[in-house]
Length: 213
Image: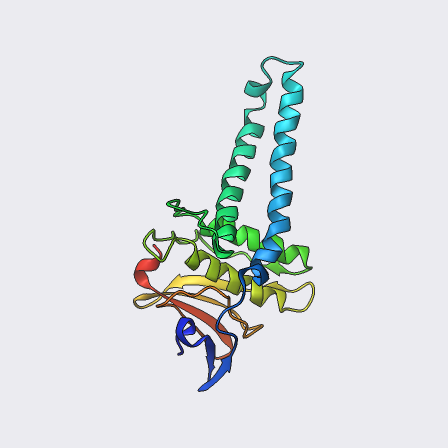
């Protein structure tokens, strides 16, 4: 297997498929696809809060009665804030700073699915709970962004109305994300120690065991 972060190639029976070593952040496909999704989610949260504010004008106990709506808005804002921090970091701004989200893969996967559904494709559900992100990997954003980019790039290369099948599981001393091989395109982010390769027609991203939990 070739080290994708060093060679920026995917191994295919000994033949390297070369791609540009890096791409300008503003051309990052996932960043471009994610932005309208985030705008839509912020709009949903704003609408919930606006409705609560209007109701509070006529009913003093509106917040208590509609606490579920307030909690829903808070959840949207929290998850969206994490995705915005990832997007900004992938685009060159250190917005993530010291923030780490152990369970950050879940909102990212949902965000990728929303991106694909906007383009007439989908991301299949996986079994069980997604693994937790380790806080020590890179600057905190590279690993989730790489994994999300692989899913997005592979999914968008499918024919319309198709759903990308994928899985992420613990192997022998590694974690492995596998999905249907729809494209050889690699994410622009670099992360030494990660391997991105083809195995019998399946795209596999292999990670050190301590990067996820």
